[in-house]
Image (cartoon, rainbow, N blue to C red; front, side):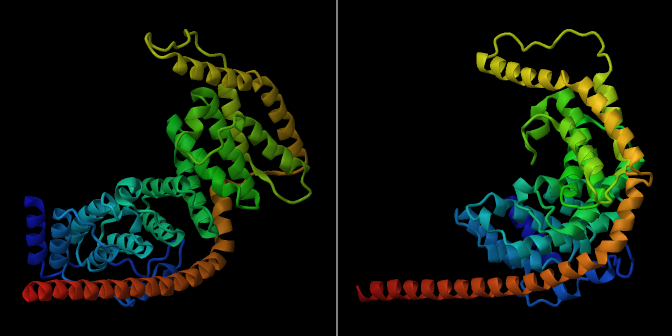
Length: 415
């Protein structure tokens, strides 16, 4: 009870908005027109005092009633300072853990990310995105792109990579612009660092594979090979379950084999697609690590007292892994033969994947941007219509409630 009262007091005390940094005019991967917020700022919105909205929501929650999606939307819409971002985060959390949690509107999520970027709270944007289950933040591709580009502009590739991982986990690689930005971030990070934990290798592998499957060019093919190689290494070192658990990936074994199938596809294809030497080297290193003699160690046994079902599942997993392990020398021979064939056909690209991705972005991103911006304008119109419909329905419900209240009062007076 005390916390909401303090929060409302702070909101009431906020009379002078703090200035915020503006990054307008600074060119990065996305054009100034793409990241420009004028169309969003010019949208029709309701001017509300945050203290009044906070009081309304607190009282509604105290009465064990659900807060409407319009109320939380109005709160996020009317943020005017960095401090108010923190209050909005609290109410987004409360809303997510309320009966109306499924009704957080797409425009509210978009506004939240824009407000965070506007008032220098990109850390909050990323935190709520990573903790999406707790806050309900599931952005669209346009919003993902804005956040990624912001971190790229700041040369904060660690956080940009976290955004890419979220795009992967939410399986949101449908739009070409998101694919290109994600691949750029991935190859920038891979060019700077090569030593990763197996969890990072799994996330990197999945994040390379999924957009790579959608790109019909050398970058896409090389990304598939790179992704399969990393995932195959994780599969054979950590077990198949480590690959697909909580991931948008196939649970079937054989990721190294799929990497070799990509090489076979390129070798036999009459098209001009090539595989980057960098991706081939990753598969080469993965096979070398997997076929190297393991240091002598006893097999890890499950603790005594554990159930028979767990032992059966473990044995089944070990059988699958043993099958793939037994094929490693065959995989290594296939790899060497295919690598020689690709070199003989002139289908090995010597340029780095970061260079190739940067060139691809220069060629394709302007067209992708035009498509995204047209879709965004349509969304703005659609969101406006949906919002107006909700406002009208809210107004009708209030009128109906007032009529019912007056009828009850009149009935009491008549009695």
